[in-house]
Length: 169
Image (cartoon, rainbow, N blue to C red; front, top):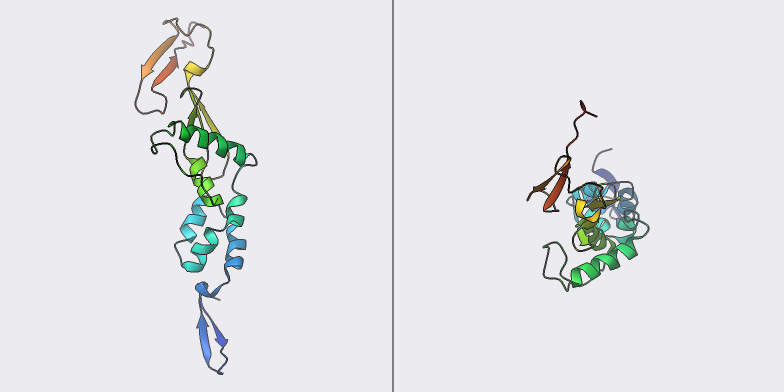
């Protein structure tokens, strides 16, 4: 059993089938068990796999239960131009579940850029990043315990670093 098998054709001749001859629905049933990056890799095999990898039934199970709410929230952020530098705002809403998944995998800033959410592209879990400016932290202005760092490596430009000396605690 390999990628091809022999079959008897209508004219009595033996023919060869390949993975591309599999019905798209069978391929989609297999793709349901894969993670999103694996689905995208398999989609490169041939047309049948590419078509099945774009099916809504495959991607529906990869989206969080509240994806409609998150998508509306992301679309509102995109319309306001708060799409994190991924475009010019005012985008068309994604039509397929695969496009919805791709949009929700991009960080969506909210609360004046102090927070952002996205879904994990490997497992579909919801991720949240909260800036220290969005939290009420006691003593954050006390330089003995906290230092403010400016960085370009983070989605939040200012980071707060807690200094804690275990020997004097």
